[in-house]
Image (cartoon, rainbow, N blue to C red; front, side, top):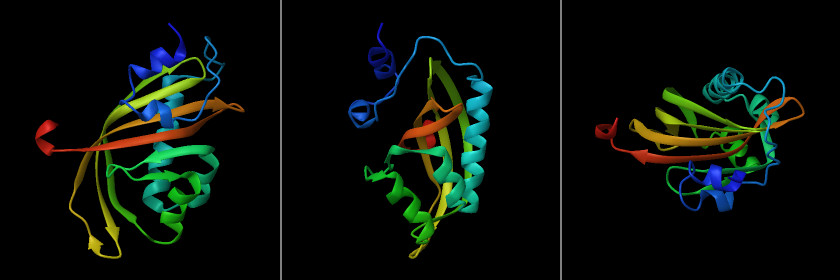
Length: 157
């Protein structure tokens, strides 16, 4: 089964068309582990909570596609500008579930989270969502190339 067929089983319909092309070798590179991906996820979460734009910039691919739970699509620079311009700030962000599927030099992370953001309009209600993030192993590091979130009801937890 080819990488596109394999990945498409895990990505919501239409997201694959938005995902940047990644070179998927059949063997995982040295250092490419589930624990390594989860460690990168922890760094990403900390950077988002702290509004650490430079860390997010380093760990995000230039070909990044960010699909918000509202359906809005952002590029890397648009995503980072939201932090820089104080368009939003995370008051809390809890990953409740995270699963990593390694496919060569591609990792697909799926799970569930809840967060609270503050916008210029004030603190927003708790958002519950499921997420899919795609990482590519580039230059010896996991680089986030795609994020997609879908808002869910807390009753679906």
